[in-house]
Amino acid sequence: MYAFQYRKASSLKEAGELLVKDADAKPMSGGMTLLPTIKARLAQPTQLIDISGLSELSGIEVKGGELIIGAATRHQQVASSKVVRDALPALADLAAHIADPQVRNRGTLGGSVANNDPAADYPAAVLGLNAKIITNKREIAADDFFQGMFATALEAGELIVRIAFPLPKKAAYAKFPHPASGYAMAGVFIAQTAAGVRVAVTGAGSGVFRWSDAEAALMKSMDPTALAKLTVATDDLNEDIHGTREYRAQLVKVMAGRAAATIAGKN
Amino acid sequence: MAKIKMTVNGKQCTGEVEDRVLLVNFLRDSLNLTGTHVGCDTSQCGACTVHVDGRAVKSCTMLAVQADGADVVTIEGMAKNGKLHPVQQAFTECHALQCGFCTPGMIMTVAALLKDNPHPTDDEIVHGLEGNMCRCTGYLNIVKAVKQAAGLQHK
Image (cartoon, rainbow over all chains, first blue to last red; front, side):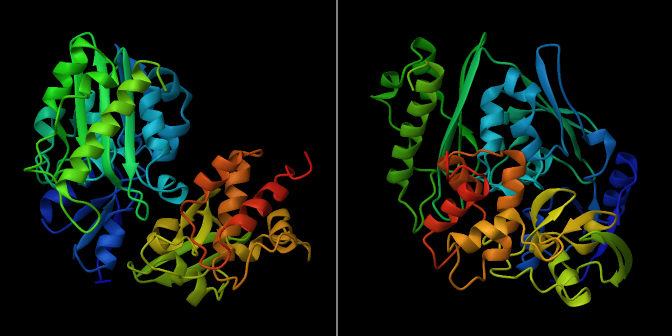
């Protein structure tokens, strides 16, 4: 691992300033992606600014029809929180199936969303629920936040403070994990709200995306059979030794069917 | 360089480390606690699992400086007064190891799992061991040992 300086930020303001001052400094929360990346010498930050202990980034509450979770909340805390389980069980369930227990004890919501790994689970929930990403500078709608593989709307020195998930009528997440890595080969989050249905897909493409044909079909009937005649366009899907584009398209359809079945109470 | 201080297996420990030193290297190289193993070094295999403030973590994917002020427990801290921890005892009795390389990490993960969930189902045990790999046993005896440790075997 290349050498770097580690610094524990004492406030959100200080963290933002340190990051603006040094373009090669990186914020670190759980470090579950960043540290392996640095160890593999795929990144060479000058400084790691540890933001995991900041009180501004903690807390879980339901307020005004939204579930609001601090960015430094660990996956294990989301998975086991009674507030999350009661308000948005699909999100607790999603968090309980990220990686493995040791990683869930360190990795954080904000870290995962800011990193925007194309196979991460949280981006599917954020986009599917049309969540608001609240940073130290502004509020960003999920539709504007994710900009393809590892790219987001975040600017230099901009840090996610919390994420506000509007509470749906019902929601469910189904994923097909890669048998070795546990990352989603395809993961589908479906949210049924007063405004309609949103379907967000992770793992299958170069970044999280909405499947609009499935949204229209499930709006008419929240039932796996509603997806039977649909196909997922394969042009932008991933293809590698683990699966072809066509295989991933089929996985997306099957996972969407499973999530729809859960919402319909047919599992 | 950073000066760090942490409680390891109940004892106050101090050290001076480079910022990039991993917790596992601090434990093994500075404190000579070599029971914690480095298997894959890429946070897949779980051989390096230790407890930090009561939670199981992979010490190859945490900096020593991040554990400054923390309460750390390693495999060396599990047996008390010459008596094995119940999870160690169950692993011994159920033949839950062959080469033993993954065992320290397995024990630490299982101890943490049983603290959160004292009576896990088979599914919960298997799901709970997803971050630990064993290349010898095929896991069957490990699951058996977890059940024995949980006192489920005789129910």
